[in-house]
Length: 246
Ligand code: CAA
Image (cartoon, rainbow, N blue to C red; front, side, top):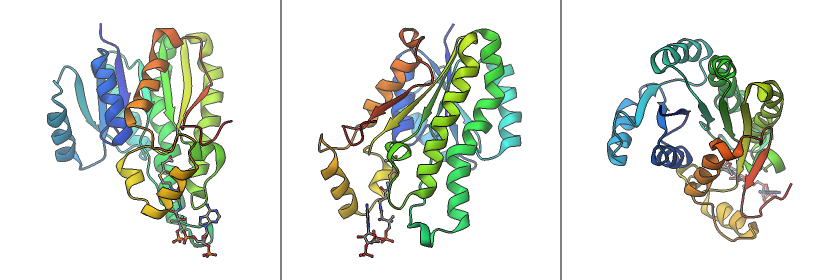
């Protein structure tokens, strides 16, 4: 029986690399995409050359608690189980705090943090009942160190870490591990949106003097969901080229 891994934000830079990695390892991937983005999702699916057995596309608004509860309960019924949850969907709305709007605060907290409740809650009980599960939350170096211009994003990403430690304590005796990956600046469309001079200055502060490759984050996910990582829970693994050592 294939293990089933649900990945949010699966078409993005890191999400797409995670999807490819887990498919290559024999997982069946449920790749969620945002409301109305079906064409974009199917283009991605075709470009990657996935089969329907390897990847199931699922429209899901991760900020919508009721929709997640309903659609993920149905998914559980249809697939039999969901063994792995990768909370990867995330956005930025950068700006100095003095100028930050309440909407930009709310959008980031909803998409990056409230989503973790919305997606994990409907699936966690079944993982505990089965006695096996892996939850991997994709946080950020900026959730650990705080970043100028990212009060919203740093708060959400730090929140994911506290959430994961608490849930790890709840899942431990049922064989469900909950861990965090904190990537550094990674070569993705999100980072490409930054002002070139700001990005250049940040890369200059990275001891390895380069961005992470999305595949390097995907390899870390692969380890955390493997049987070999069964005793790791509540941990935060940094993959940041030495930018911040906690
Ligand atoms: N520390 C201290 N001061 C800083 C600073 C820093 N890191 N960065 C900028 N400043 C200062 C500037 O020197 C400037 O000072 P003066 O007014 O005295 O000239 C002032 O703060 C305003 O800075 P900006 O000109 O940059 O202001 P802006 O409004 O044009 O831009 C910003 C603000 C959009 C937040 C911009 O600073 C920025 O892009 N910062 C980087 C944010 C960032 O790292 N985003 C990561 C996105 S990718 C991601 O999030 C993925 C991940 O997980 C890593």
